[in-house]
Length: 258
Ligand SMILES: [Mn+2]
Image (cartoon, rainbow, N blue to C red; front, side, top):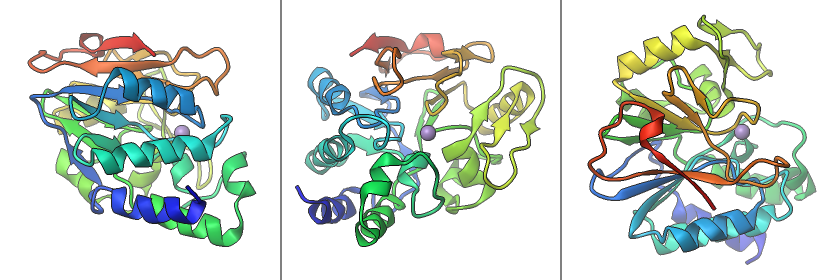
């Protein structure tokens, strides 16, 4: 698939411009962390958890860092086209080149300006979050300062809420926001997590994005997951949520190595 073909396929593969995905409670849901050019990781996930039988939520950052960004993105788009209702590709900061540039960005920097523009525009339509009625919210980075879950469907690209979702880190300390200016990574603390999750009625947040974060944070209610070899020794794991499971903490999701 050429890059132009990929951009056109992606245009058909995004979730019709929806920013918030509602996950079906009756199907096993599999959350997949950053894959970052690790096509082999994506391939293993698709083999082990066939879409259709499972709902698959990819948490963003498909390109850069790893050896095969284009192959990884192509495989994901093909899976999305084949199973539009059970494969969900959320936006990470590495898909948001058209909104905010960053460095290092080995994949984006190798594209010609027209290629980067075409691909950047279609990736900017990706959804930002997925909500499961058992009280699980999935997104790339951190929670936006929202009043209710539905507000996540109306987040504007480039807004502070968008920056929290795609760029936000969590800090294992009391407090709310740890300022990061216009270009740095916004960071949030334990009190902010407690307040926003209470407001949204969320028991567990599943996210990726921050390689240095502990797997479990905030009373095991914030799960940080990676599914890529691009971070060196990081184990490739997914989190599985089975139908009917009562979710009190992220430990109620099963971590599976792929
Ligand atoms: Mn990221």
